[in-house]
Figure 1 (tube, rainbow, N blue to C red):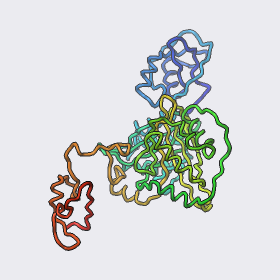
Figure 2 (tube, rainbow, N blue to C red):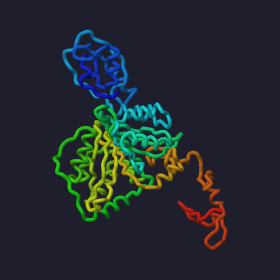
Figure 3 (cartoon, rainbow, N blue to C red):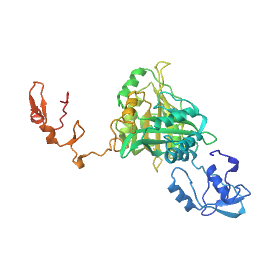
Figure 4 (tube, rainbow, N blue to C red):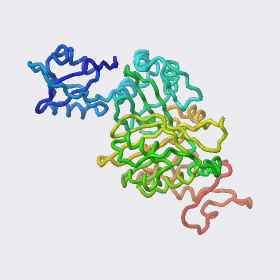
Length: 432
Protein backbone atom coordinates (compact mmCIF):
# COMPACT_ATOMS: atom_id res chain seq x y z
CA UNK A 1 0.00 0.00 0.00
CA UNK A 2 2.98 2.34 0.39
CA UNK A 3 4.34 1.81 -3.13
CA UNK A 4 5.40 5.05 -4.76
CA UNK A 5 4.36 5.37 -8.40
CA UNK A 6 5.86 8.66 -9.49
CA UNK A 7 4.03 8.47 -12.83
CA UNK A 8 0.78 9.04 -10.93
CA UNK A 9 1.90 11.93 -8.78
CA UNK A 10 -0.59 14.76 -8.37
CA UNK A 11 -0.17 17.50 -10.96
CA UNK A 12 -1.90 20.81 -10.63
CA UNK A 13 -1.50 24.54 -11.02
CA UNK A 14 -1.19 26.23 -7.62
CA UNK A 15 -3.26 29.38 -7.42
CA UNK A 16 -3.78 31.99 -4.76
CA UNK A 17 -4.74 30.31 -1.49
CA UNK A 18 -3.84 26.87 -2.84
CA UNK A 19 -1.13 24.75 -1.21
CA UNK A 20 1.12 22.20 -2.91
CA UNK A 21 -0.09 18.63 -2.45
CA UNK A 22 2.28 15.72 -1.98
CA UNK A 23 2.73 12.34 -3.59
CA UNK A 24 1.87 10.01 -0.73
CA UNK A 25 0.12 7.03 -2.36
CA UNK A 26 -2.44 6.72 0.43
CA UNK A 27 -3.46 10.36 0.09
CA UNK A 28 -3.53 10.16 -3.71
CA UNK A 29 -5.73 7.08 -3.62
CA UNK A 30 -8.17 8.89 -1.35
CA UNK A 31 -8.18 11.85 -3.74
CA UNK A 32 -8.75 9.61 -6.75
CA UNK A 33 -11.75 8.11 -5.04
CA UNK A 34 -13.14 11.60 -4.42
CA UNK A 35 -12.48 13.39 -7.68
CA UNK A 36 -11.53 10.82 -10.29
CA UNK A 37 -8.25 10.35 -12.19
CA UNK A 38 -5.36 12.61 -11.35
CA UNK A 39 -3.01 13.71 -14.06
CA UNK A 40 -2.13 16.46 -16.52
CA UNK A 41 -5.47 16.09 -18.28
CA UNK A 42 -7.56 15.39 -15.19
CA UNK A 43 -9.20 17.91 -12.87
CA UNK A 44 -7.09 20.23 -10.78
CA UNK A 45 -7.02 19.46 -7.06
CA UNK A 46 -7.28 22.63 -5.01
CA UNK A 47 -6.55 22.52 -1.29
CA UNK A 48 -6.74 25.70 0.71
CA UNK A 49 -3.65 26.61 2.67
CA UNK A 50 -5.73 26.98 5.84
CA UNK A 51 -6.99 23.40 5.50
CA UNK A 52 -3.46 22.09 5.07
CA UNK A 53 -2.26 24.04 8.10
CA UNK A 54 -5.06 22.60 10.21
CA UNK A 55 -4.24 19.09 9.04
CA UNK A 56 -0.58 19.55 9.86
CA UNK A 57 -1.39 20.68 13.37
CA UNK A 58 -3.38 17.52 13.95
CA UNK A 59 -0.68 15.17 12.58
CA UNK A 60 2.83 16.55 13.02
CA UNK A 61 4.44 13.42 11.63
CA UNK A 62 3.30 14.09 8.07
CA UNK A 63 3.06 17.19 5.96
CA UNK A 64 -0.59 16.46 5.22
CA UNK A 65 -2.96 13.96 6.77
CA UNK A 66 -6.48 14.49 5.52
CA UNK A 67 -8.31 17.44 4.07
CA UNK A 68 -11.31 18.39 2.03
CA UNK A 69 -10.75 18.83 -1.71
CA UNK A 70 -12.71 20.36 -4.54
CA UNK A 71 -12.44 19.72 -8.25
CA UNK A 72 -11.73 22.65 -10.55
CA UNK A 73 -13.29 22.23 -13.94
CA UNK A 74 -10.48 23.36 -16.23
CA UNK A 75 -7.52 21.07 -17.11
CA UNK A 76 -4.05 21.90 -15.85
CA UNK A 77 -1.39 23.52 -17.99
CA UNK A 78 1.44 23.91 -15.48
CA UNK A 79 2.84 21.11 -13.36
CA UNK A 80 3.78 21.96 -9.78
CA UNK A 81 6.68 20.32 -8.05
CA UNK A 82 5.23 17.73 -5.70
CA UNK A 83 6.05 18.05 -2.03
CA UNK A 84 7.04 15.00 0.02
CA UNK A 85 4.47 13.69 2.47
CA UNK A 86 7.10 12.45 4.96
CA UNK A 87 6.55 8.73 4.44
CA UNK A 88 9.06 7.50 7.04
CA UNK A 89 7.70 9.43 10.04
CA UNK A 90 4.15 8.65 8.94
CA UNK A 91 4.95 4.92 9.06
CA UNK A 92 6.62 5.33 12.46
CA UNK A 93 3.49 7.10 13.68
CA UNK A 94 1.32 4.31 12.35
CA UNK A 95 3.28 1.33 13.73
CA UNK A 96 4.75 2.52 17.02
CA UNK A 97 1.94 4.86 18.12
CA UNK A 98 -1.34 3.93 16.45
CA UNK A 99 -1.00 0.16 16.00
CA UNK A 100 1.39 -0.32 18.91
CA UNK A 101 3.33 -3.43 19.88
CA UNK A 102 1.02 -6.38 19.03
CA UNK A 103 1.45 -8.35 22.30
CA UNK A 104 -0.56 -11.26 20.92
CA UNK A 105 -2.90 -9.24 18.68
CA UNK A 106 -2.83 -11.10 15.34
CA UNK A 107 -4.21 -8.19 13.31
CA UNK A 108 -1.66 -5.76 14.74
CA UNK A 109 1.16 -8.22 14.11
CA UNK A 110 0.07 -8.58 10.47
CA UNK A 111 0.20 -4.80 10.04
CA UNK A 112 3.76 -4.81 11.37
CA UNK A 113 4.92 -7.71 9.22
CA UNK A 114 3.30 -6.23 6.10
CA UNK A 115 5.19 -2.97 6.68
CA UNK A 116 8.64 -4.61 6.49
CA UNK A 117 10.37 -5.97 3.40
CA UNK A 118 10.97 -9.73 3.27
CA UNK A 119 14.75 -9.23 3.54
CA UNK A 120 14.74 -6.39 6.07
CA UNK A 121 17.71 -5.94 8.37
CA UNK A 122 16.50 -5.51 11.96
CA UNK A 123 19.24 -4.59 14.43
CA UNK A 124 17.69 -4.59 17.89
CA UNK A 125 20.92 -4.28 19.85
CA UNK A 126 19.18 -5.16 23.09
CA UNK A 127 19.22 -8.71 21.74
CA UNK A 128 22.30 -10.92 21.47
CA UNK A 129 21.29 -12.17 18.01
CA UNK A 130 19.31 -10.53 15.23
CA UNK A 131 17.67 -12.76 12.60
CA UNK A 132 17.12 -11.21 9.18
CA UNK A 133 13.85 -10.63 7.41
CA UNK A 134 10.46 -11.33 8.97
CA UNK A 135 12.09 -13.48 11.67
CA UNK A 136 13.98 -10.37 12.77
CA UNK A 137 10.73 -8.38 12.95
CA UNK A 138 9.15 -11.12 15.08
CA UNK A 139 12.18 -11.14 17.39
CA UNK A 140 11.92 -7.36 17.75
CA UNK A 141 8.22 -7.52 18.62
CA UNK A 142 8.75 -10.40 21.03
CA UNK A 143 11.42 -8.40 22.85
CA UNK A 144 8.92 -5.56 23.32
CA UNK A 145 5.92 -7.71 24.22
CA UNK A 146 6.54 -7.66 27.97
CA UNK A 147 7.46 -3.97 28.18
CA UNK A 148 5.33 -1.09 29.34
CA UNK A 149 4.08 1.55 26.91
CA UNK A 150 6.68 2.82 24.44
CA UNK A 151 6.36 6.61 24.31
CA UNK A 152 7.88 8.55 21.40
CA UNK A 153 9.59 11.71 22.68
CA UNK A 154 11.02 13.21 19.48
CA UNK A 155 10.68 12.14 15.85
CA UNK A 156 12.68 13.55 12.96
CA UNK A 157 11.20 14.59 9.66
CA UNK A 158 12.26 12.74 6.54
CA UNK A 159 10.97 10.92 3.48
CA UNK A 160 12.88 7.67 2.98
CA UNK A 161 14.33 7.53 6.51
CA UNK A 162 13.88 8.99 9.96
CA UNK A 163 14.63 8.36 13.61
CA UNK A 164 12.92 8.84 16.93
CA UNK A 165 13.80 8.91 20.62
CA UNK A 166 11.59 7.09 23.10
CA UNK A 167 11.17 5.84 26.65
CA UNK A 168 9.25 3.03 28.34
CA UNK A 169 6.52 4.11 30.72
CA UNK A 170 4.26 2.39 33.23
CA UNK A 171 1.74 4.65 34.92
CA UNK A 172 3.79 7.78 35.70
CA UNK A 173 7.15 6.00 36.06
CA UNK A 174 9.76 6.48 33.31
CA UNK A 175 11.88 3.47 32.41
CA UNK A 176 14.47 2.60 29.81
CA UNK A 177 15.24 5.21 27.12
CA UNK A 178 16.39 4.59 23.56
CA UNK A 179 16.61 5.71 19.93
CA UNK A 180 15.43 3.98 16.74
CA UNK A 181 16.50 4.55 13.12
CA UNK A 182 14.17 3.48 10.28
CA UNK A 183 14.84 3.38 6.54
CA UNK A 184 12.32 2.59 3.79
CA UNK A 185 12.84 0.93 0.42
CA UNK A 186 11.34 2.02 -2.94
CA UNK A 187 8.07 0.30 -2.03
CA UNK A 188 7.77 2.29 1.19
CA UNK A 189 8.50 -0.70 3.42
CA UNK A 190 11.04 -0.81 6.23
CA UNK A 191 14.22 -2.31 4.85
CA UNK A 192 16.51 -1.38 7.76
CA UNK A 193 16.02 -0.74 11.46
CA UNK A 194 18.55 -0.14 14.22
CA UNK A 195 17.48 0.36 17.80
CA UNK A 196 19.71 0.92 20.82
CA UNK A 197 18.63 1.55 24.39
CA UNK A 198 20.65 3.26 27.08
CA UNK A 199 23.23 1.17 28.99
CA UNK A 200 22.22 0.60 32.59
CA UNK A 201 25.81 1.09 33.73
CA UNK A 202 27.14 4.44 32.54
CA UNK A 203 30.93 4.55 32.92
CA UNK A 204 31.34 8.31 32.41
CA UNK A 205 34.93 9.43 31.83
CA UNK A 206 36.12 5.84 32.22
CA UNK A 207 35.04 5.50 28.59
CA UNK A 208 37.60 8.13 27.60
CA UNK A 209 40.37 6.42 29.58
CA UNK A 210 39.51 3.03 28.10
CA UNK A 211 39.63 4.32 24.53
CA UNK A 212 42.95 6.04 25.21
CA UNK A 213 44.40 2.82 26.60
CA UNK A 214 43.27 0.78 23.59
CA UNK A 215 44.46 3.30 21.01
CA UNK A 216 47.78 4.14 22.64
CA UNK A 217 49.91 6.47 20.52
CA UNK A 218 48.21 5.53 17.26
CA UNK A 219 46.62 8.22 15.13
CA UNK A 220 43.49 7.82 13.00
CA UNK A 221 43.48 9.18 9.45
CA UNK A 222 40.69 11.25 7.90
CA UNK A 223 39.93 12.34 4.35
CA UNK A 224 40.54 16.02 3.73
CA UNK A 225 37.46 18.17 3.21
CA UNK A 226 36.75 21.73 2.11
CA UNK A 227 34.89 24.13 4.34
CA UNK A 228 31.29 24.83 3.35
CA UNK A 229 28.00 25.98 4.87
CA UNK A 230 25.71 22.97 5.35
CA UNK A 231 21.97 23.52 5.40
CA UNK A 232 19.47 21.44 7.33
CA UNK A 233 19.90 18.75 9.97
CA UNK A 234 20.93 15.87 7.71
CA UNK A 235 23.49 17.99 5.85
CA UNK A 236 24.92 19.39 9.10
CA UNK A 237 25.34 15.90 10.58
CA UNK A 238 27.07 14.66 7.43
CA UNK A 239 29.33 17.69 7.44
CA UNK A 240 30.29 17.28 11.10
CA UNK A 241 30.95 13.54 11.05
CA UNK A 242 32.06 12.79 7.48
CA UNK A 243 33.95 16.00 6.66
CA UNK A 244 34.96 18.05 9.71
CA UNK A 245 35.81 15.13 11.99
CA UNK A 246 39.59 14.98 12.36
CA UNK A 247 40.00 18.11 10.22
CA UNK A 248 38.77 20.85 12.54
CA UNK A 249 39.18 21.72 16.22
CA UNK A 250 36.15 21.16 18.48
CA UNK A 251 35.61 24.92 18.80
CA UNK A 252 34.86 25.09 15.07
CA UNK A 253 32.32 22.29 15.35
CA UNK A 254 30.82 24.07 18.34
CA UNK A 255 29.65 26.93 16.12
CA UNK A 256 26.85 24.67 14.89
CA UNK A 257 25.42 24.28 18.42
CA UNK A 258 22.86 26.54 20.09
CA UNK A 259 23.83 28.32 23.31
CA UNK A 260 21.24 26.35 25.31
CA UNK A 261 21.87 22.96 23.72
CA UNK A 262 20.88 19.86 25.68
CA UNK A 263 23.28 16.98 24.94
CA UNK A 264 22.52 13.48 26.23
CA UNK A 265 25.47 11.11 25.89
CA UNK A 266 24.42 7.87 27.55
CA UNK A 267 27.96 7.07 28.60
CA UNK A 268 27.14 9.61 31.33
CA UNK A 269 24.42 9.74 33.97
CA UNK A 270 23.61 13.43 33.49
CA UNK A 271 23.21 15.40 30.25
CA UNK A 272 25.44 18.26 29.17
CA UNK A 273 23.79 21.67 29.21
CA UNK A 274 24.97 24.65 27.19
CA UNK A 275 27.81 25.26 24.77
CA UNK A 276 30.53 25.38 27.40
CA UNK A 277 29.84 21.89 28.76
CA UNK A 278 29.45 20.47 25.25
CA UNK A 279 32.74 22.11 24.22
CA UNK A 280 34.60 20.50 27.13
CA UNK A 281 33.05 17.16 26.23
CA UNK A 282 34.12 17.41 22.58
CA UNK A 283 37.65 18.35 23.66
CA UNK A 284 37.94 15.18 25.76
CA UNK A 285 37.20 12.90 22.84
CA UNK A 286 39.27 14.96 20.38
CA UNK A 287 42.33 14.12 22.49
CA UNK A 288 41.89 10.41 21.71
CA UNK A 289 43.94 10.50 18.50
CA UNK A 290 43.29 6.86 17.62
CA UNK A 291 39.52 7.30 17.71
CA UNK A 292 37.31 7.63 14.65
CA UNK A 293 33.52 7.61 14.50
CA UNK A 294 32.51 5.99 11.22
CA UNK A 295 29.11 7.31 10.13
CA UNK A 296 26.94 4.77 8.31
CA UNK A 297 23.37 5.85 7.50
CA UNK A 298 21.81 9.30 7.80
CA UNK A 299 18.12 10.08 7.81
CA UNK A 300 17.07 12.75 5.30
CA UNK A 301 15.28 15.23 7.55
CA UNK A 302 15.89 18.98 7.51
CA UNK A 303 14.68 19.78 11.06
CA UNK A 304 16.15 16.70 12.77
CA UNK A 305 18.47 13.87 11.75
CA UNK A 306 19.12 10.40 13.11
CA UNK A 307 22.20 8.48 12.03
CA UNK A 308 23.99 5.23 12.79
CA UNK A 309 27.71 4.79 13.35
CA UNK A 310 30.44 2.50 14.59
CA UNK A 311 33.68 3.16 16.45
CA UNK A 312 37.07 2.54 14.84
CA UNK A 313 40.12 2.52 17.12
CA UNK A 314 43.50 2.40 15.42
CA UNK A 315 45.66 -0.15 17.22
CA UNK A 316 42.80 -2.39 18.31
CA UNK A 317 43.09 -6.07 17.26
CA UNK A 318 41.76 -6.70 13.77
CA UNK A 319 39.22 -9.23 15.01
CA UNK A 320 37.97 -6.94 17.77
CA UNK A 321 34.26 -6.14 17.39
CA UNK A 322 33.38 -2.54 16.62
CA UNK A 323 31.03 -0.76 18.96
CA UNK A 324 27.86 0.30 17.15
CA UNK A 325 25.91 3.42 18.01
CA UNK A 326 23.10 5.76 17.10
CA UNK A 327 22.64 9.54 17.38
CA UNK A 328 19.74 11.96 17.13
CA UNK A 329 20.27 15.68 16.37
CA UNK A 330 17.54 18.33 16.35
CA UNK A 331 17.79 21.97 15.22
CA UNK A 332 16.08 25.06 16.59
CA UNK A 333 14.37 27.72 14.47
CA UNK A 334 17.75 29.40 13.86
CA UNK A 335 19.19 26.21 12.36
CA UNK A 336 21.46 25.49 15.34
CA UNK A 337 21.72 22.12 17.12
CA UNK A 338 19.50 22.38 20.19
CA UNK A 339 19.28 18.71 21.20
CA UNK A 340 21.51 15.63 20.86
CA UNK A 341 21.20 12.05 22.08
CA UNK A 342 24.13 9.63 21.60
CA UNK A 343 23.82 5.96 22.54
CA UNK A 344 26.56 3.33 22.19
CA UNK A 345 25.55 -0.32 22.22
CA UNK A 346 25.94 -2.15 25.51
CA UNK A 347 26.75 -5.80 26.07
CA UNK A 348 26.11 -5.66 29.81
CA UNK A 349 24.50 -9.01 30.82
CA UNK A 350 23.00 -7.18 33.80
CA UNK A 351 20.31 -5.87 31.43
CA UNK A 352 18.79 -9.32 31.10
CA UNK A 353 18.51 -9.71 34.86
CA UNK A 354 16.92 -6.28 35.24
CA UNK A 355 14.44 -7.11 32.46
CA UNK A 356 13.33 -10.15 34.46
CA UNK A 357 12.96 -8.12 37.66
CA UNK A 358 11.35 -5.07 36.03
CA UNK A 359 9.88 -6.23 32.69
CA UNK A 360 7.72 -3.14 32.14
CA UNK A 361 10.39 -0.46 32.62
CA UNK A 362 13.66 -2.47 32.36
CA UNK A 363 15.43 -0.27 34.90
CA UNK A 364 15.95 -0.93 38.60
CA UNK A 365 15.13 2.60 39.72
CA UNK A 366 12.37 4.28 37.68
CA UNK A 367 12.62 8.01 36.95
CA UNK A 368 9.98 10.69 37.08
CA UNK A 369 11.45 12.55 34.09
CA UNK A 370 12.75 11.53 30.68
CA UNK A 371 15.79 13.82 31.01
CA UNK A 372 18.13 12.74 33.82
CA UNK A 373 18.67 15.36 36.49
CA UNK A 374 15.19 16.82 36.08
CA UNK A 375 13.49 14.36 38.43
CA UNK A 376 11.26 15.92 41.03
CA UNK A 377 12.43 15.34 44.61
CA UNK A 378 9.99 14.47 47.38
CA UNK A 379 10.98 17.35 49.68
CA UNK A 380 7.70 19.16 49.10
CA UNK A 381 5.81 16.01 50.04
CA UNK A 382 7.66 15.76 53.39
CA UNK A 383 8.27 12.14 52.47
CA UNK A 384 11.44 11.95 54.53
CA UNK A 385 14.14 9.34 54.22
CA UNK A 386 13.48 6.08 52.38
CA UNK A 387 14.22 3.39 54.96
CA UNK A 388 15.45 -0.10 53.91
CA UNK A 389 11.95 -1.44 54.53
CA UNK A 390 10.64 0.88 51.81
CA UNK A 391 8.74 3.23 54.14
CA UNK A 392 9.53 6.94 54.43
CA UNK A 393 10.60 8.16 57.86
CA UNK A 394 11.65 11.55 59.20
CA UNK A 395 15.17 12.51 60.22
CA UNK A 396 14.56 12.09 63.96
CA UNK A 397 13.44 8.49 63.45
CA UNK A 398 16.74 7.77 61.75
CA UNK A 399 18.72 9.45 64.55
CA UNK A 400 16.88 7.41 67.19
CA UNK A 401 17.79 4.05 65.63
CA UNK A 402 20.09 1.89 67.75
CA UNK A 403 23.25 0.66 66.06
CA UNK A 404 26.18 -1.41 67.27
CA UNK A 405 29.51 0.33 66.91
CA UNK A 406 32.85 -1.28 66.06
CA UNK A 407 33.53 -1.49 69.81
CA UNK A 408 30.47 -3.67 70.32
CA UNK A 409 28.50 -1.02 72.21
CA UNK A 410 24.95 -0.18 71.12
CA UNK A 411 24.22 3.51 70.74
CA UNK A 412 21.69 5.63 68.92
CA UNK A 413 22.68 7.01 65.53
CA UNK A 414 22.60 10.50 67.07
CA UNK A 415 25.18 9.45 69.71
CA UNK A 416 27.30 7.73 67.09
CA UNK A 417 27.35 10.84 64.88
CA UNK A 418 27.97 13.19 67.77
CA UNK A 419 28.38 16.80 66.74
CA UNK A 420 28.88 16.08 63.04
CA UNK A 421 27.27 18.54 60.65
CA UNK A 422 26.47 18.41 56.95
CA UNK A 423 25.82 15.27 54.93
CA UNK A 424 26.25 11.99 56.80
CA UNK A 425 26.39 8.58 55.10
CA UNK A 426 25.51 5.56 57.22
CA UNK A 427 26.82 2.24 55.92
CA UNK A 428 24.74 -0.67 57.19
CA UNK A 429 26.75 -3.88 57.42
CA UNK A 430 23.66 -5.90 58.16
CA UNK A 431 20.10 -5.47 59.33
CA UNK A 432 18.79 -7.41 62.32
